[in-house]
Length: 488
Image (cartoon, rainbow, N blue to C red; front, side, top):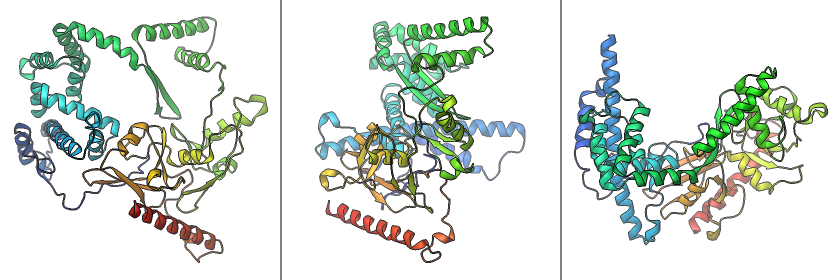
């Protein structure tokens, strides 16, 4: 979210527990990763004040640092498993139902590693597989013969196997066997798949059949106002769709169409999906832009929710395409969004369109842009009460945060709390069951100044009285919210 997440804060009394120890009453993590990591810390990267100056020495140092990163990844895996064990015990002590034990653990690991909660769950799964079922892969990671990504590939390709079969594949592909020496990612995946199929062909076949249920379409930003529209499909459907698009492109090229083959395939995909050649039908696309950039050719970039920042000139062209009667691709509505001139905090919003969701929902989605959990930039699916409604939290924009579905469920796990915090814009503070706090500030809207100008200070200009009243009301509201938190 464009750097909107502030630094994490450790709770009082939590210091450096040392490598190989988890919080609370955990004993030392079993040994090899800790010893390897301590050894690398003592002999390797600690000598950075005397970097090598010859080419061979630089390459040796790069390799040494890569080995150190792998050893650190192995230690993180062991610590993650120990942390999950402690958290499950604590959740059981608090009376969490058996089917819900483990909720929110991956999210805590993700925050500690500055990753999204979704990736935190995958990292925890990787750690459990390495520590409990794949000792040879873990040893290769500890010694730098594998990096974390390649260890992930081996874990992924053996996920459908029983523990005994997975251990057999792990031994077959062990680093000291030479089976993976010099292999790239694709060759490594192929070797793991073949070994898994030899052990349990039925499970591998069933996994392939189940994979079809995970088909989906995703959207990722690309440079220069482009994007990647990606479909995960069964291989037969994917090949058939590609052949249909490529055949259509070849026919148009043969007829003299000047567009490139890739352009023709992309255009055909859009037209066949939307149903309108070159246009957009039945879909609303929001665009946030300042009045200066829209009407006075200002230079502030605009924001396209679900994509990110776009150039102001490009945004004006798109809006012009919707208002030009001769070439109208889509209809255009303008909604006024009022923001504080110094901080960019949204204050109010109006609507001139007919078929829109409730105004407050649109207001929060525009303000937050993506999920407000730190390091998570998933699309907003839920509007969450920061102070829960059932404990007296009001249904207001200040007490609301846009969250993805997974983060909203995690927030309801025992030990997780959230409340508004002081900040230049709407700021959310999330506290995990271990007492660590993380901050998330709503991203600045287009045209927001990095620092309030001098005229925004109370008493400096005639218009400052109104700004001062806004600040006074905001402080009063925050005081009421703090009282509500205390009462809850």
